[in-house]
Length: 181
Image 1 (tube, rainbow, N blue to C red):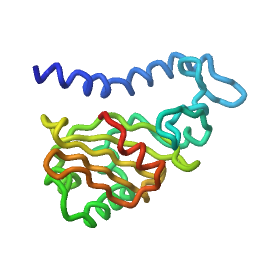
Image 2 (cartoon, rainbow, N blue to C red; image 1 turned 90 degrees about the vertical axis):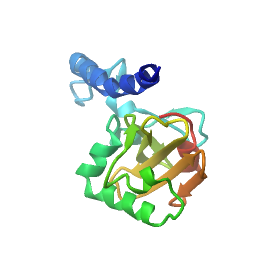
Image 3 (cartoon, rainbow, N blue to C red; image 1 turned 30 degrees about the vertical axis):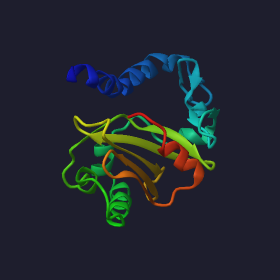
């Protein structure tokens, strides 16, 4: 039964590889003048991202500047800016589950691939993670600016309730409160 619950996470993990493969195959259909490869009929500069309203989608060339398909642990361990902004957020909070408090130094979470989104006209990268084997009871979503220097975080925990860190604007908060990993 546990394997069946992990299948969506495994599928999400493989999605970036499938997209990258499609991008390589579709590179021949790219716009030679701009160097903009088309994947599935959509140019890389026309990335779709969530809007501030929360339910709709908007196509924006700005979203292309944000990265997607990356995993939280890899980004935190390879980017000093992302690690610093996350540590600052966690340092400011008192009432967090231990897996969240220690997620930089001893990761005990699973995460899906990141999603490129636009918040108030600026590109951001949205990550979701949860406590391994307890995703329904304890999860988080974190939104980083494209350069990793700004971060907002929402933790939803069965025992502690919702914890919001970083004072996100309304558009960011609606993205952070969306369900899913």
